[in-house]
Length: 512
Image (cartoon, rainbow, N blue to C red; front, side, top):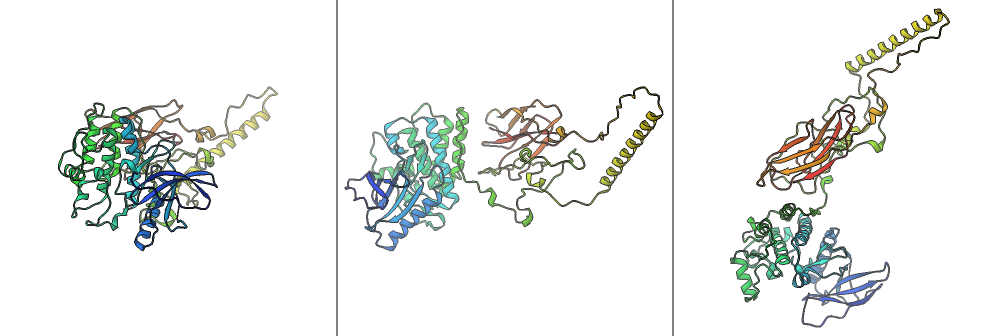
């Protein structure tokens, strides 16, 4: 923030000591305070005037509530407290980010492609989280992105944010022209989530170019001239040889004049940058989104089955008639976690068999004996009777035999169908050298292959695509699969299964 006016007087806040001014804006000042207990530094945003009228107070309360609702996200500034000072001025107490904001950084240093994309992906997670909560930021720009002690971007200043359902086509809102979408300059255009996506793409463009998208280094950059270029001119090239064509294409799409031609969501924009990271062989930046999978339960599921994801599909395990329950530490979780951001843009693979989930191993009431179970008990009883007769014959023969030492008995009293305890709890190691590769020319075909681990027994394999709407796992005997109709980033999970015990290894994951 920057202004030519003198800063306001910092308010007296019990339990806090004023340190210095951090910044000044058109409607508020931000001061650094030291909290006494627990001891820490905090940033306090104070409105310039007391909230004398209802509208000002309601806007302040709305900003406090919006930021508090979202501030658990790692790329959104954390709100600690909100109140009104003794002099009547409302204030927000929030996380202090001591490092320079992005506006300072892009003007003073050349930011790398890798760091700019990493910041963009993390900010996209923050914006997507806000949109899923029905909140539009409406003023995303480098100056509103702080930097934490750990180097993470932290989006702040939700002062003109609105609940998306309350936004109207004709409402007048504040804006930062260089990063505002074209529709913001028209009274009749819709101002929805696409405007935040435009501002997010404009912010990443600015980090790479060292200027806003339509700012000219040697030209005039008045408000009117900027608005004219934003509305009419094509996206200018950044002018750096190290920027991949795919990244420039993603930025151009994010800055499209027509909102319907931009990315459908901030998460989709983030995935486009993740694909560029893969193209450059960079570490993949995680897209931080809230996991709400536990909130969605099918309507046709009864109260007694609400922990189950799918119904049981039996695979005929080869286990003893009455096996001992495996220790809790050895139980392998077979049900996957629904990905925070499922890709339902295309109809992917259909599974033909599903592995039982962990909840399907819960204790159940004893089922009535089936004819097969009765026959099995009759066979066991018959075997036991034969063994007893053989032992009786041996004993009688020994009593009538000479005094020579009896031969060492070779019979065994265990059933030949009974596996050893080691076999019952044996768990195979996970598959090795997982490779997930897309076909040539960035095709929609993905080849997944892996090596069988060292294991004394026969193995099969289970695989799944996290986030698939069917949410099943398929069981196969081969060590490779081919997926088709899978554009974008695709991740695959693989696990090994011991065929004699149905024990499942740890799951491993690879992406393409």
